[in-house]
Length: 259
Image (cartoon, rainbow, N blue to C red; front, side, top):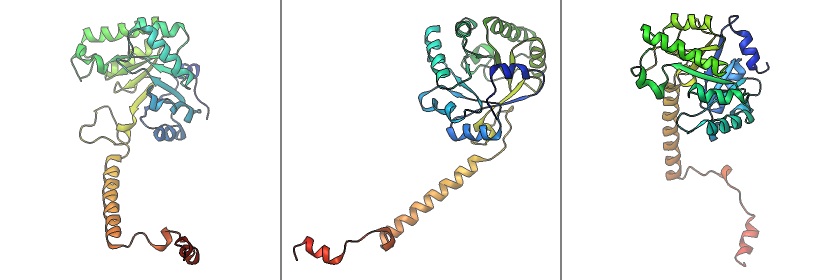
């Protein structure tokens, strides 16, 4: 398997659904790559900067952290650093004007419409977007603005599914659905939701394939038990045993004391 280029992704538009996952750990990125994931993404932060090099056979996307950049120059500098770190594309949740600066320099940009978490107050909070005429027109206009700015893809988050499907037909952008139905070009989930790492609320749009939270609880119980057994062995003298230590020859030992 070789990494899909931006050209490959755009050529897949309308031909097959792409699978895309957001990861938080290097081992998740490696597992996703081994599974054959089309696209893998994570935030471009120092502790994640090496992830892309760990999965050279997968299309890797670094996301520009919201609130880190004050202007286009700062974003562009970080985006170029992300590409040098091995990314094939960059996520940027900022305005079309910012996206245009990145696109002019050849940075492949994924933009974001619908429920954009840092901007959710404008669309009514943590709820679906695009169920009214005014919101539907707003989402469609934003997509057109990002397309004109030079983005190659758009994340469409928790938007009415039939609206997202129509937008997909009408835009040249690769559309990425996070809770916006199967009519988009790609499906996107967070690894934490997919693997069942979270307790309590699970987003309506997420599907959980494993129960890692329960496994982590089991491992924590095992940790406590192991520590208790160790403490008991130390207290009783059962640890260390002969096999855990080395000895000096007794004759040599006596000579240490001059005898």
